[in-house]
Length: 625
Image 1 (cartoon, one colour):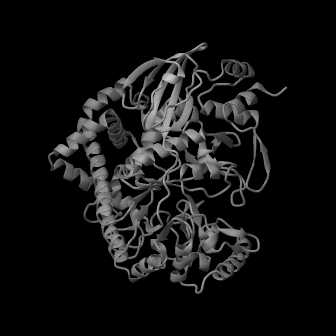
Image 2 (cartoon, helix red, strand yellow):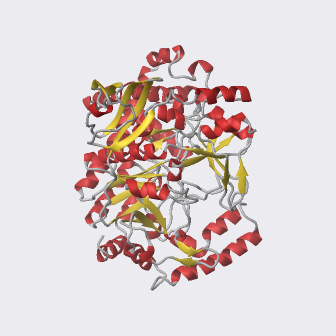
Image 3 (spheres, one colour):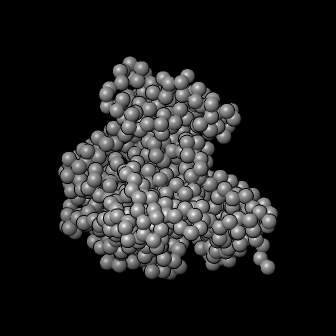
């Protein structure tokens, strides 16, 4: 007879086993099951506790009902009486499934009086699919690297917007701009955010800043904050700011309180005095009064950041760019940042997002990020997820979801046990994505792109395609064969995708050809000399194989290849236009490599005037983009 704790874990979505990318079989043990159940908020230290949870079931959770917006939902309630609360707050009552009304786009809540008692239901009224975009192209840039001095600012996007709009570009993409940790200048990775529903204020434009090939967050971050503080003190709050604070309500106040307390106690709430570790404590209630000036300052910073991004999006649309800004959503959030402080119940604690063992990491990876708790998401009718998407899409026309494989399953690593996969409510999450995409881009409808690289679970590709979520087709990965390198020709690429040569985590065109990433891993201690020699030899075979698909080895040939693909969107990378060799991020390193710090030579203005940009535009026009 199996252990009841394993039965409970499987019943709550924790996988009983999995195969890693090398084909090795891993079975989930009791230790892992108990730890991950705890992370889900289910205490099952003993089999007796587990049996009690199994007997209780999950009837207290809502049912998820996904249906097409503008139609009548069908739910299995027979002739039971029901109470409906629409997303806009309108409440109605009725009896029997036939009397349920046609429902508009949105997330609605229903309670039906069934024989076992009141049953909650989440009614996800979504479009069938996100419409496929027309053939188009755009550019991706590292925002932090766009200024000649200091940290790149939102306003640095404007000259690139003008240049791309004039040349037929449809979007300008950038790294995540989630709120970070301004009180700790060393915590600057855009993929380890403090809060994904708030913005990074270090990208607000100020004067000054250090120059040189690397961005200096340690010097320029504190200086920029002090300049912004002085500007705030010297100004009177305009009506637009007052209206913004009123509209944002308590959520903004709570975030701003977190930022104010961080100034006093440090970046991570887990290290604060216990009285301040929950936003609803009496100590925090008192701090909302005592720190009201600081709260106003941090609220003002958020208003400034959102205003700057909205200005850039408006400028993009005015310049004729169909989609405008293309923003990136990090896969998780820091376990002790502002997001988990404000909304702790939505996240799993005691486990971090990661990845199973592979050829590069025999022990697997621990990314140190807090995952959404799928049980909590379901209980909250997906409100945290919907707000996360909506926040990005109200200042952009395109949203890239990092590691969208996590819509199917996420790999959780407990503190003291091996990790395994946890099932996520894929269909409901995709419905939320379709709902928010329909509202995005100023109501014109946004585009969702899923970073679908890696070991894709069965069924996910079809589900993404059915929802109109575009995939990512990275040329260096698009192959028929890896051991004896054979790359796919342009015509073999998927249409429902965005095509690029590389990503921020991979080498540039020149870097790939030169094996610069392999050399960097050797220099930083990631690989031994003999392995580096083997990889360099294999890279030469790879570049030779890729060159068979091109008429030449220059970037014009590469961009012509990408432009010819059936993929609806093509992303041209700024680093390739500038012939940069070093990549922006070297996975597996921290301080050993200048991750997220490499400045673009000449900044945004030089890139906007670059002669090769006109050539890229010409190539795209030749291929109906």
